[in-house]
Structures are given as C-alpha cells and as structure tokens.
Length: 494
Ligand code: NAD
Image 1: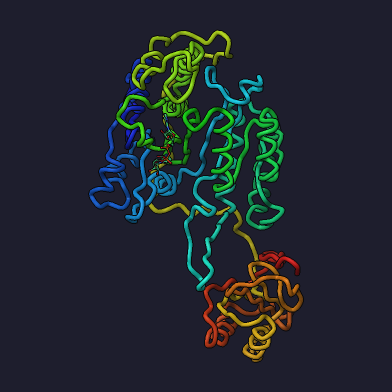
Image 2: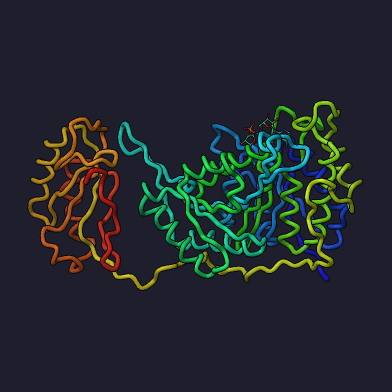
C-alpha cells in the first residue's frame, strides 16, 4: 500500500528544534510505516529572498498535492509587506475550521489544577471570513473601515465540522458563541445557520451564548463547556483565553481543517529569545501531530503517544517554561526522548486515553476542482431594490447636510429618510449630544414603495451621480429586500 505524503515545514526560531523532537517521537512510534514526510521551503529564508508570500512555488504545489501540512511556527516580517504565512495558508487552501483542544495536563500547574477543577473543551473557530478578510480602506481624513463578511455557506461549513467533531468525540453539548444582540445580521446569520445545521445532529444539545458572557463563564466554570464554535476574530480571542486556562500556548494543539488541505501547527510563535538553545517546549507541536495522526486514521498510534506524553508529564519531566521548580528542566530533545522511553506506558493518576486495537491509515480527498468552487446556501431568493445607503465625507452639521441632500435628490425616485454617524441616528431626530466624525451614512428610500421591484440599479446610480457631484461617496450599499425581508439594519436610535 502506498504511503500517505505529508508536507513538512519546520519553521523559524524554535521551529526546527520542536519539529525535530516531535518527529523523533512520531518516528519512534512507527509513523514511517504509513507516512512519508516531504520537506517544503517556507518562512524566514523565503521572505529574505524577497518573496512576500514566504513560501516557494514548489512548497505551494507540494502542499496542494499532499493535502496535509505539518508546520512549526513562522515569523511574519514586520514593515516589509510580507504577509502572515499562517493566515495566508489557511485562506488560500480553504482550511475553514480551526480546531483547538484545551485540557488540563498532569505536571502543568495552573490556577485550575491547584483548585482541582479539570478543564477539557474544544474551540472550533471559523478560519477564513470575518475581519480576517483584511478588507480595509481609509474612507475620510479621520475614518478607516474594516469590512466584516460572514457568509451562509462559510458558516455552514464550520458548524457542520463542529457538529461532526462533537459526534466523533462523543460530545453531547455544543455552544455557538456570538454577538447577535448587536451584530444582528452578521452574527445573526452565523447563529441561524448553527441552529439549522444542528437539526441534523439531534443527539447533540445545541446552545448559544453571547461572547462576553462566554468569556466570563469559561473562566468561572470551564467544566460547563465541551465544544464552542465561533466566528474568526471572536474565536481567536477565546482560543487564547482558553489557552490561559490550561497553562499557556505551549500546551494547545491546533488543526486547520479544509476539504482539500489541512494544516497542523503549533499555536505559539517562533520564540526568538530561546531559539537554538534546546530549551523550547515541543508539547504543542506534538499534540498537533497527534491531531494529524487521527486525521489520517492512525488512531492507535496517536493514543499510544498521547499516553506516553501524559506519563512523561505525570513523572514531572518538563522543559524550562513549566513544571515543578525542584525538578531540573530537560532540553527539547530530551523531553522528546522521555516520551519515546514511555511509549507503551500509561499515566497512573491522569485518565489514560483508550488505545484502539487496530487502525487503518487513509486520507480521503475530494477530486481536485478545475475552477474555484462557488459555495451557495440560498439559491431561490427574490430580491428587490427599495433604496440606497450612501456613505460620504462631510464636515457639515447634520441639519445643513440634510437640506443639501434633499435638494440634490429632488428629481430622483428617492427621498432622504435617515442620516447616521458612526451608526447612531442624528437626523431626522437624534440627540445633540451625539458626537460626530467626518463620515456619514445617508439613507435614501423610495418615495413610492409601489415602485419596488420595478427597476434595477440604474436609478440608484443616477442618485449617486447627483450626490457625487458635490460629495465624495466612499461606499454605497443598495437597500434590498430578500423575499420581502429587509436586507439592512436600522440605525441605533431609529
Ligand atoms: P512567541 O509565542 O514566539 O513567544 C512568546 C513567549 O513565549 C516568549 O517568551 C517565548 O520564549 C515563549 N514561548 C513560546 N513558545 C514556546 C515554547 N514552545 N516553549 C517555551 N517557551 C515558548 O510570541 P511572539 O514573541 O509574540 O512572536 C514571535 C514571532 O512568532 C513573531 O514573528 C510572530 O509573528 C510569530 N508567530 C508565529 C505563530 C505561528 O507560526 N503560528 C504564532 C504566533 C506568533
């Protein structure tokens, strides 16, 4: 049987050391029987050659061919235009779900371990959309915008992965974290799709929790959570909070799962302060390696290594960044060696992981698409134009601006109905105490609602032409109804 190919990028800083220790452990457990690692060139050396992607063409095509990348941390050069490889990789290959497991480990002292409170839960974070699209513009002298895109199919993918992961792990309760009370449409969509997807998993209790309350509850009672699914930025923040509960980033494995390519990586950085000194802790990368083994069906091998790692930690073996001060720290390589010595052992006090009798290495991948896949959730939707929000630059007072805009729109299908500044309505009514900046949303709606659906974008563009002669319009959003439902929110105070 042919071996599974895995692209391997040790990374920068402490990357090569922690990767060597991790590979020593995997190889000692017999991974070589099933897997062949193929080194790819990524990171600091490639950036230094002036390639702002930080990865060679050969690396990109090798990862596409293998479908799996095992990577160490990589630095992002600051101020040279180089992009974060970590973010680029996830987005480029559509690795849409980031899975992280946070649990108390023996020998890793935390506030919770001291109090006898076990921590064991997963965070699954949408990995592509949200503010991570990096769509940012300077709109006026004083205002910069970051566009936050949340899509129905993007949400569906991550929710389905969360539910399938829960089912596979025997998890009975999944929470969707969100801020749908404020971001009613974007987080509202994410939450709606969670509820829709959850219907296919009736054995799993599907609950939701507002993101700020989630942070408090995770700290107060981490045991209440088994798996939390989140949008990208909220998930990023909650992941690091969760890492803090279990002793830091050095103990949190991470898998980025996509249909075609999945990436397994340590979540900590390149730790330049200790690089090359054999002091780094390889646990995060080893645990990520175990997620990778499970991804390719090597369940028995992953459980065997996991038990050896737990036994090692239980015996007090530790690198300098954690562990009992009275036991001398070991080096990165020696820490890996200690795990290898314990392969076949189980932890005595900590619950051991069940080791399956048999395993079968396999990697199922969908066929390579011939073009970028267009994902769609809603296809039969009737939409009608009912107006437009124009975003424009002005330092005028609200009432003066309103009079001018009413004059400019006199001969159009639309009338000015509302103006807001930073999302708060200031015209036709509002508070004199609302502080404003040089950027306005001005809402125009049909004078005659009976005309809805009888025209396309033309009349809106004509309106923009008139307003645009006098004001800089930085952005325009058509106001549309989708199957009769407004596709826009009201301003705060409207
Ligand atoms: P860092 O995680 O590299 O270091 C923060 C602190 O934690 C340092 O004191 C470091 O010594 C320590 N530390 C980190 N990993 C450790 C380990 N395995 N064992 C022992 N101690 C460890 O974060 P940073 O200093 O903010 O970032 C340094 C570089 O890493 C930056 O260029 C950043 O862009 C990059 N980075 C990469 C990734 C990634 O590749 N996934 C993630 C975060 C940061």
